[in-house]
Length: 404
Image 1: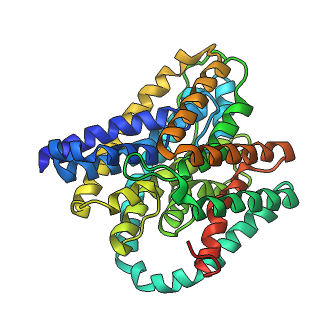
Image 2 (image 1 turned 90 degrees about the vertical axis):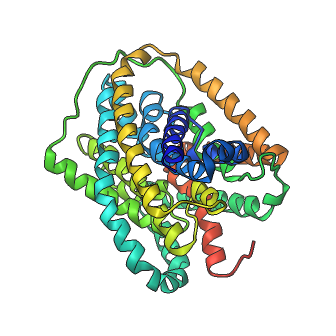
């Protein structure tokens, strides 16, 4: 078993690094690829190796996804909000500092989230029926807060409802998509269109300025306080269904994206993303419920004991932290990079990936999602409102108004 665990850690780190560094690719996509070839991997490393690689890929992704967000300004759904202060630092020639701040937030959240993991695992399942009953009301409250505090509440509501209707349509007719690898999800084209291609097409222009060498300039206590806040937000959305990393980032965003506070926002959102990954595992083992694509993949195979996955995830976090620091030192390699050409290549790759994994119906969803994804910057609202694609279907299903 030790060999299988070590092989799974190495494979997961490699796949998580790839998914983190390539815009438009998420750890959920890596989970689908791993499941597609799980027969071969299980023969080589056993089911334990496959399960460990899935979780380690997710943890590694939460560290490395800050690199394309910072350097290119082309985030995935998890980093759609943190790209603003991070890319701002990059345009000032301080990409290394932004990436290091993100790495610190993710790394410090790991020892903070483990006690929370135990607390949630032991005590929250007993009150989960109450939480289930209230989840629709809670999500309505979260959506209301996002709309009310938006720059343009009216347009924010329009974007939320439009993306929500697309989400309802997507999940209602998901059976129309292809399943060439045994399992696939329309979340990939849905979220890639809303948060990936639309962002790439709008933000892809010019050249990246000359990058210097800068260490993180944030006080020790500010760093610790901000990491704790981010970890708490990630813990909340990691346990509650329907709330994603993007939702956690939205809750953290008011007043934290400008000036020096923008650095705190980078730390907080990174901490939230990594904490979310760990708490999703707690929800899977304690409740048997999957909170993200990787957990869905894990729920379909024979997973090893919880302790093995936690140890493997912690080891992956340590290696991912070091890899992120290494990539931060390489930020100067991107000086003068023609962002438009790189983004065009990424868009083409994502379209091909969506077509291969979900078929014509997935491509149709991708086109519709991309069209809606262009709307927020045109009407000056935050792209977070596109999370209606996930939240509205869950609100209606939790209130038993819609059955899939």
